[in-house]
View 1: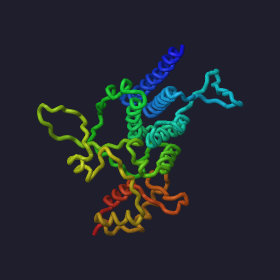
View 2: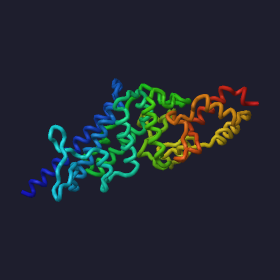
View 3: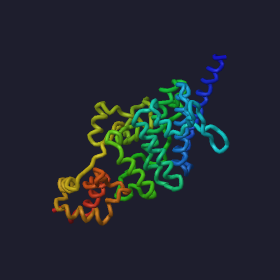
View 4: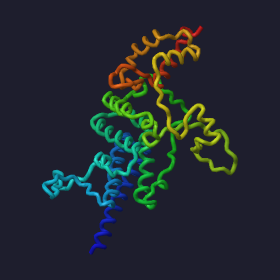
Length: 331
C-alpha cells in the first residue's frame, strides 16, 4: 500500500514538471512567433505558470504542503476557491518560502515579471517586447537551468530551443536617443520598471540571471567546411573576447554607471565640446524634463532625494545634442 502511494506521489510531481515544461516552451514559441501581437503578456503569464508548477513539483517531492490553510488549534483548514478547489501557493509565495531553492538573482527576475504582469493587466504597452527582451531571455535560460537542476536531465528543454531566424538586421544601429528609451510605454508601467530597477543593488541589476545582455557583430569571413552558424558566442576570457570587451561587454555583467552633472559636463569637454558648460547642461535637462524618473535618464541616490545621478542614456542624449550643435560647443 505504501509503495502505491509513493508511485502516485511521484507521478503527480512528474506531471507537474511536464506541464511546467510545456508552459515554458509555449511561452517561447509565442514570443518567437512573427505573427503574434501579444508577445510580452502571453510570455509573462505562461512563464509564471511554468515556474509555479516547477516549484510545486519540487515542494511535493520534498514533502512540503504547498496549499493555503488556516490553523485551527492543531488542525488545518484549507482555503478554497469559489468553485471549492483547494488553493495552492502562487509563485510569490513559492519564492518567499524559506526552503525555496531558487537563487537571489533569478528570484529578482521573477519578482520583476510578477509585478509587471500586475501592472500591465489593464495597460497596453506595445514597446515592452524589445525593451525588456533581455529579462525575458534571462527568465527562459534560468528555467532551462532549474528544470534539470531540480528534476533531472530527462526534463531538459535545451534540445527544443534554437536560434530564431530574424527579419531584422542584427547590425542595424539601435542607438537610444533621449525620451525614446521608453517611447510607447505607459507612465504607470515605466514608473514600475524604474522603481523596481532602482531598488536593486548594482550587482543584482547587472546579473545575467536578472537580464541577459548580449551584443552582436557581423562575422565577415568563414573558411569552407566550417559550420555556418548565424550566431556564435565568444568566451569573454578568450583573446578575441577580451579584445571585444575593450568596447563592449559580451556575455557578462554590464555596469550601470551613474554620473554627477559635473562628470557629464567634463566628459563632453574632453570629447572636444569645450564650450559646453554646466549652464548649458542645466538648461538642456530642464527643457526636456529629464529628471522625470519614468524617462529612465537617472535617479536619486538616496531616499532623501538630495543628489541626482544621471545614467548613460542621458550621457548619450547629451552627446547627441552636442554633436547636433557642434559649431556652438566647439572652437
